[in-house]
Length: 347
Image (tube, rainbow, N blue to C red; front, side):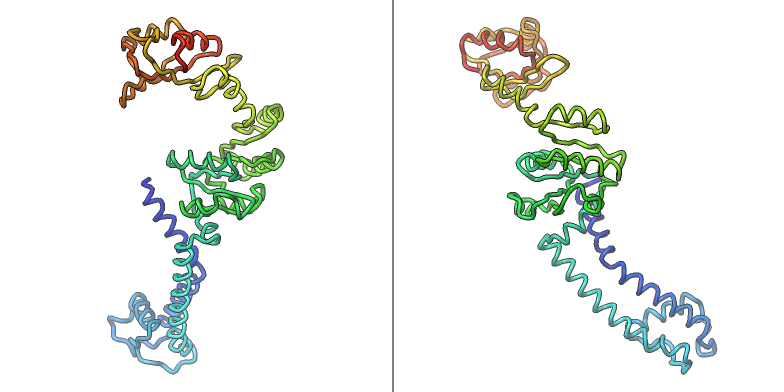
């Protein structure tokens, strides 16, 4: 569904929710008055074309807004209708104007109260718990992917508070393990929750609470202790548990070999590296084909860039030239050979 359409539906739901009491009172009074007039009002006072229930309902609507479509009847059962409907109409209009103005003001200022209301209207969204350095970066990436976010942060004065408010991202303040706060974030209708605070036990508590509320929600959790993280994932059925230090350690270690290491990760018992290789003057790769590099170095070439043109699936017979850039994935053992093939050029 188009983003603007989703936003309009969400705003409509919020406005209806804000007027729930208003609507219930108005509809109840309308139906009661219509029914009372239909069964009690003397039919002799009405022309034939005005005696149906629908016609009486129309008369009640006019009476609510200070019209007098039918003659007054001095019947104690009907007196409250004749006197009460205009007063009710006046109160309804005044209450509606005040509430509408309040909601518009809240929306314009993106107040905490508005953020709480709008968070409850989200569906198929991602909840991000913890807006420290990691949480903010994760939120930025998710937003760039076009995802809808509801965030939960313990501190009201977190560093990026103004930025999130300017981008109209609802942030709920409080403990993410609180079931009421997760309910306010509409966890039951969220597709995933990312728990990224710096407290392992609090993260686990939030994960278990979210799973209890929404068994099908995808849970991604941050933990500092990798051993504990592995046990948690196995024992509690959490979808993904990551240790930030364990993820970053291979990148730091492999950076000693090259400045252009983009990422490192483990697959089975192998340490896999993704790095950028620039073909420079004097490189052994000049005039070689993509397939030659793959065969000689047991490397996977994911991307080739020549000037501003990028090919995400370069053909095997493409001949390399100076200035080309390659995105290569290979294991730790093959990396030194690839680097030395650059004939001393810095990589």
